[in-house]
Length: 430
Ligand SMILES: *Cc1c(COP(=O)(O)O)cnc(C)c1O
Image (cartoon, rainbow, N blue to C red; front, side, top):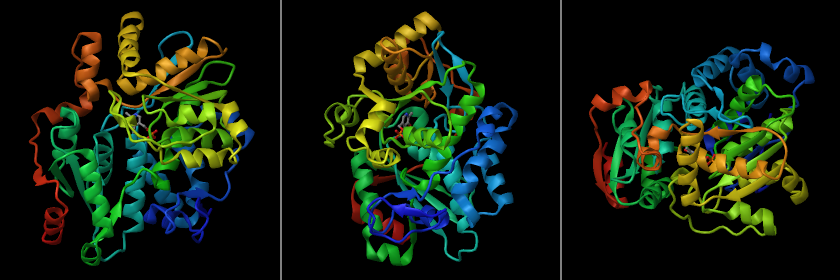
């Protein structure tokens, strides 16, 4: 399998090169040359396969010969070594819980797969690779955890001091080993700007082999298909599900659509957005107008110009009418999101996180005028956003087992002003 750039001005590359580059030289996103088609019997017999077998069957065509079968199976087994339960909330709405991984968010799947692939492709490299990531909360934890202990790779995470939740900060700052946390006195945008400038700096790039762990990387995007298949294994209804995905950069829903085009039965997709409504607006008006991001309580979706949306368009051959047939989108405000957390807790004894709540409301709303049954992707554990959730339901949430150890771990971060020259000097002299 080769990958082309969606800007159509760069050579085609294999999976290894696409994963190592992240973005094509013409700044386009990489896209697979063709979409593998699954045998009907694979879907019909899906319940008889293990998660690991499904993982291999789905990923093998995308990876091609760039990773040996034995190593690919090993990478997949490590990527998905936790549960993906589909739980009924009401008769018509279930939740696919994607927060049972080490950092309690769905990003663990993409980050674990990508980190192991990069470790594999770099295994004979003489120079260490340094991964730089700026995070507003969830991404940094998943990436850092994914790369923890991977040979030949150092990870430096920049996070805005005082602007991530308590658990998120502990997840970033207590890992040690090859992971270093820089606590920047500034905003997420400051962190992002420092990282971007580092990638363009000649001195730094001559001395250090810098890489990004960006969410547009094919090695993060493609494995996100897997849990859509795991959900279908657990789906009990005759009719295909309606799937509601809380969306920010649209990588997650784009992976689901890719799985569907490969043969996974899905009746309809709902892209559930917060106040950042570029895509809901686009579906109404056919005008795509990016805007600055607006801060909300579902902050991992505060994106004003979703980077993966161009892949969604490509999946529908840029045909607006086919996209509109298969996917709806709605913008849900913060008050409605909080109210949904409260209502679902009181009526169904299920605790949603703010992102899952946006998806829940979107699906419930859709089912008022459309028939069918569906599920939401519950993308993070509610404890990661405990302030918001506890405000809504009025009781405190227990720390799940995966993060109990964090409470007694020691925070280690390096404090830094939001100043590029400072950052550069520190990187040059490490
Ligand atoms: C990143 C994130 C999202 C948004 O996912 P995209 O792939 O960017 O659309 C939703 N929920 C949570 C909890 C996240 O961390």
